[in-house]
Length: 130
Image 1: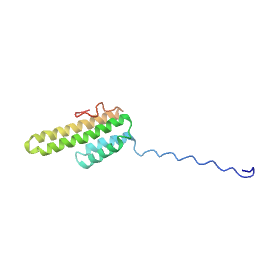
Image 2: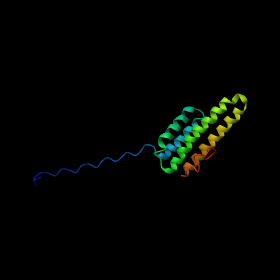
Image 3: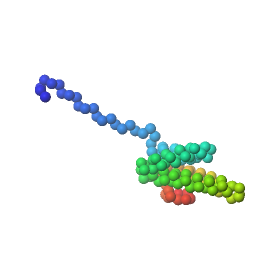
Image 4: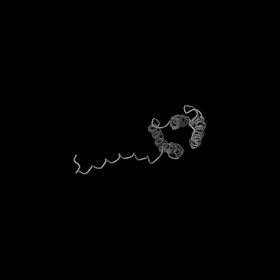
């Protein structure tokens, strides 16, 4: 390079990664809300469990407990729902469906409260209320 040639400008800095539109905590919150809305429209619970499965390996340790809790809530709840629906003619199914309703509602509310306080789920693998 000679003294008369203009210096080339420095290369532009690499582009910064765009922040996500929705934070991880907001996605976790959305799954709880989708589960609650699932009482009226079952497809939202399915969307919620898909989100939980996609995010569980990407999440930090605290949110990972919530995603595991949500995944188990879906599958155990589905088991209760199927058994209750199949046995509704034998009257016991009504009680199983009532248990499913209360059980999923308590788990969702407990998860929402823990998420709001920034706490993990104490026992995400629990069959009861975590």
